[in-house]
Image (cartoon, rainbow, N blue to C red; front, side):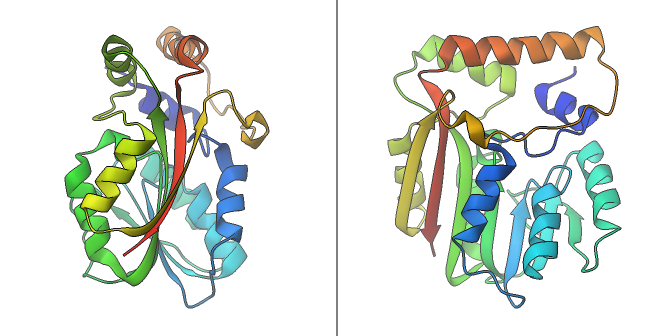
Length: 232
């Protein structure tokens, strides 16, 4: 069965996470990234963020994903970089890296799709002491259980959390200095970046994209995303 993530991969849509690539760049500007910084981009997709960090900041960038089409497109993107990005097929629930390896770990629309306690444990393990964890993830306010079920079934979310629930999970897994901002799906539309369609649409793909738009319209005031920053 084709999923929403499969459609994103097939279309080659970059930065499909809430807020888009402009939000990502705004966040990165606030971090103290230098050529000696080691960064892990979790769920890198087609590799746009990882490539941008490598080219703009000259940092040591490692990227992971589990979707074959995403990995294929990320590999092609990274092949032209002046400074290579280390790409792995790997799950955030079991990172193939030593403990305390990264200064910054970035997750853009990843944690909602995985077993959260396992993922947070691995992020905490592989962060250096005082390292920074940045997330851009789906969030909601006052959605009914039936609405949460409908949304989660379509996007294949493992969990759909409120801002308060995100904070609790992060705190319970040892993170400190937690800062979280939450927005609805209808806020900050200027942050959404454009993309170029690189393939034709099948009827199934059109139906999936139509359902995505319908859910945004139906639940736009309760469904959104949160941006969080915390430290080990």
